[in-house]
Structure formats: structure tokens, C-alpha cells
Image: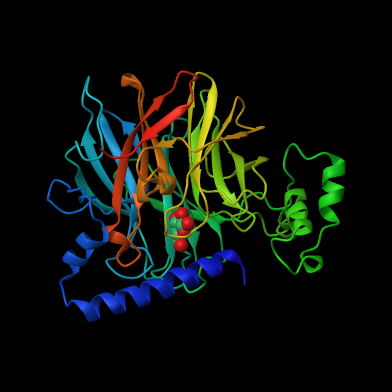
Length: 388
Ligand code: GAL
């Protein structure tokens, strides 16, 4: 059984046990349960007073508006309703936070469907949607992590959807595993030959020193060469030259990959690079400041929070250097209960925020949002202080 399955089982089991104990102890209403699950973190009300149901999301600027896309989750269960959109007018001269704006709900802009032949049929899982405006094709392009109905987290696909307008409805374009048949761009012929000799059947036991070396050398890259690389937790980044990158947890969540997207953002060029092989990083969030790329990730503990990781590089293709977590203050060791989803750069104001989800697996829809300013220390390293 792999770690993902272990995490899922542990999460499901603890959720069932906790929920049973909770209900037995006090027969209370659903909203009171949500409140108890998040002491200290209030809901983020939209313009109608409903908690914003957009998780694992992103906020982008468009035409004087902030567009907040995220996972639309049901009150109960782990499947998806699709991707929701909330908008708010951009404020001048004042940095905005998620809770300072009045968010108008536009409902679900990419919806799961009832067609059982569709890859996004009801019962599938859509996570971490990220949206980019493509000026060449004049389309909003959405990438997301897609898992197929009834197959847990094994499909590990990237979904693509487009819309000419921000409000959609977005049209599902296709889903795929990235970069089938292609080795990382910085692999030499020797690296490729070495990886090709690695077979998972020679490493039945995980976490041994030999297995770790084999993973770093491309054991799982080789395993997935034909069908394409796994892609789960993910983000996107459009660089100053207009090149778009998709950064995702691959190789059984052990290794991140940064893959260049085609100019229409609807596929891969085949140029991709690995980040921290074997490092078990999830929830990648990236930004660029003064020519330096910063990547904030989480570890792999499912819905439970863990300590954030920080990496930097002067080239998105690497090499990346790991630094201590940028989180400071009470609760920093568990990222204040959250897991990163997006770096919200308000460029006109030079304000940068770290957005995170405080997951509530009993009711994913009720998961809370954190939006914390990123400041910089004397050496130019990012610092994120806990919620006040
Ligand atoms: C987290 C991941 C979430 C979701 C969850 C499922 O680690 O960041 O997006 O996939 O696991 O257990």
C-alpha cells in the first residue's frame, strides 16, 4: 500500500471515529460542528453572507476585478461539485485580503456532469484549480488536478478547461498525464540509461536507503514513462517572458515537477525539470521577486497540517535550494493549521499574500481560508507571520 492510500485511510478512519464520538457526545447542528472544527478561524462570508466555497484556489486580476476560483465542495463527502468563482472590485491604494473584500458569487463555472462517459462525471474529484488568461488565444485557461470517479487518487491527471470570459461556463477540454515518453530536460544520456535500468519490482519495500536513491535516480519516472507522469497537487506560473509553467506533485507525491506549457497553455512542450526528488512536497505555491523564484510547499499528511517548506532558485528550471520554513509565531510548525494554495501578488501595491486552506475533512465546504502577508527579512527571505 502506498503512502497516499495510507494517508487517505488514516484520514477517513479518524474522520469516521471523530465524527461518531462527536455525534454521540452532543447532538448538535451541522453549523455548530463547523464552528467547533475551527476555533479562532471565522468563515469568509460572500456578499450573501454564505461562507465562500472556493478551496485550493487562486486569485487573479482581470479588468479591475479580483477573480477567486476554487474547489466547490459538497457539505459532506470527498467528491466535487466543480470549480466556483467569486469576484470583487479591485481597491486602489489599499492592499486587499480575502476577508476585507465583498465577494460576489458566480456559482460553479466548471461543473461536474451527469454524463457517465465524461472524465468529469459527478463523483470525480477536482482539486486545486488555477486559471490563467492567455492573450494569444484570448481564452481563460484552467488547469486542475483530476481524479476519476471511484478510483481514489490513482489516476493523477491534469484537467484543462477554457472559457472566453472569466465567468464561464468553462468548457472541459481534456485531461492527461504530463509528458508521456519524455525524460526531464536536464537528464543526460547517462542519467536516462541509469533510470531505464530501474524497476519497481526490484524495490518492493519503500523508504529503505536503496529505494530513496532509486527514487532520486528516476525509479518512478521510468515506471510512468509510457503513460505519462503523475500530477496531483499543483499550481501554475506565467513568467515575465509569457512562458507558462505547471508545477505539480508527481512520482507518488515524492517529487515535484515543473513542466513548460505550450503557448496555448493546453498541453506540454516536453521540457520539464524535477524539484527536490524524493522530498515529498505538496501544495506548491510560487512567486518571483527581484529575479528570484520562491516556492512554498507543504509535506504530505493529507488534510492534516504540517510544517511548510521553502525553496528558492534564480531559474525556474532549477537548481533549487531548500531553506527553513518562512512561517513565524505561534502555530508556525503546523503552518497555523493551514496548507498553502496560492501566492496572491497585488503588483501595483507590491503586496504579497500567502493563501492557505484550513481543511475540514468532515465538511470540505466549510474549510476555512487564511490570507497572510508575506514580508521580507534583511536578507530578502520571505517571512509569513501567523494570523493576529
Ligand atoms: C492533501 C492535498 C489536498 C487533497 C488531500 C486529500 O495533501 O493537498 O489537495 O488532495 O491531500 O487527502
